[in-house]
Amino acid sequence: MRIIVTGGAGFIGSHVVDAYLASGHDVLVIDSLWEHGGGQRSYIPDRVSFLHMDIRNGELGRIFTEFKPDIVNHHAAQHSVAISSRDPRYDAEVNVVGLLNVLDSAVKVGAKKVIFASSGATFGTPDRFPIDESTPQRPTSPYGITKMVAEHYLRFYRDEKGLDFTALRYGNVYGPRQDPNGEAGVVSIFIGKFLKHEGVRIDWDGEQTRDYIFVKDIADLNLKALERGSGSCYCIGTNTKTSVNTIYRTLVDITGFEAPVTPGPRRPGDARDAQFDASLAARELGWTATTSLPDGMRATYEYFRNLVARAPA
Image (cartoon, rainbow, N blue to C red; front, side, top):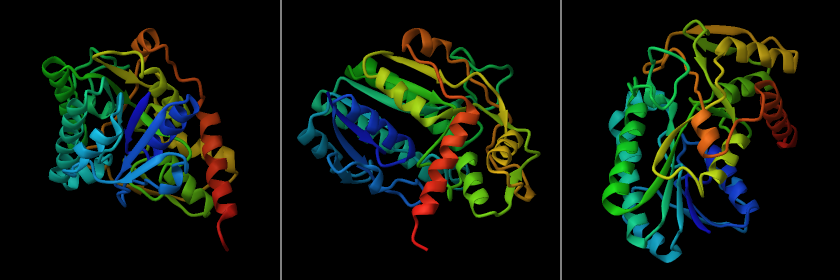
């Protein structure tokens, strides 16, 4: 298949690109390499076509016309809860207006389907756990709001314009290539600090939880979504709550270094807990997460440690 991956130079998107290439697909990556997004040109293999472009660009339709994708995998986004809370207008421009530009371009060339990176942030803090597809969506951040709105647009484009979709509501994805200097991704941020033997900041009381999923499992999910999940949204997680304090203690165990901890306030828009029941994805997509948190964190730590070891003195 011919596949456009927006945000394909980013943390998750680049792993998805690797999975598509390994399965023999023809891939074009479109990425703005936004300074806060963590995307790197070096994450894209030389044999992959790459275009440095913002998804809001009016020339996007021309690129779609030239490449003629069968599938569009849409990972380009403003992904930071903190940035969305500081600048909700910018968040909406990228996550809603940018999405519409992608959908219109896909319809114009007759693409069959969009695979959309949605988010568990669309649920906010629900009344019960685990979260599943029947849980009401009550997002507490502009980022969660725009991801929820995007799902409604996907339904509209499927019903009115014949563009199929599969939306994947990720929990907290972590792993190699995640930006250790960004605002999102506590695992990579903590690893960056541990490798420098620096202290870490733990916001709130550290007992806020997330459902952490290893990025290689997410890449496998995006492979399965090529042929399955027509017109549906799926909760994606491990059905396990893990606190920030547990992430910290696991890294202490892996590294043998007890990083000093500085307490911080609750970040605006942060939900208290998250835990996702992915049984619908197991039934309809044939997917379950297979990487344990300690194994995934150790693999992530080794990745970043090797990067530091290879860096010029």
